[in-house]
Image 1: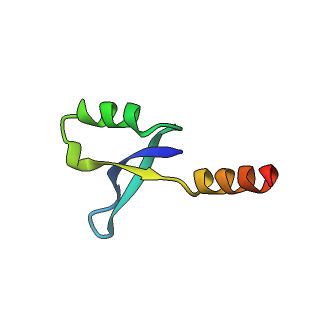
Image 2 (image 1 turned 90 degrees about the vertical axis):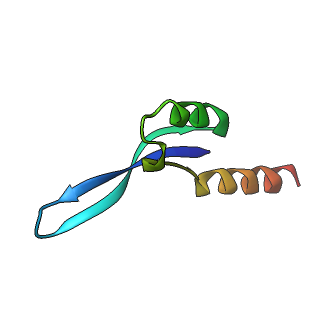
Length: 65
């Protein structure tokens, strides 16, 4: 599974903080790439792979054995 995230400002002038906010989760990376390509500032967006995908694949392998 993949997540489309955007970096956003959170905090105050005295304590500025940037964080990655999750917007969309999908099993396939391609639709997220298309969404990211349509954004005006693509550098503010990233696609990350979740640990959930690895865990579910490991469970499937154990169940098949």
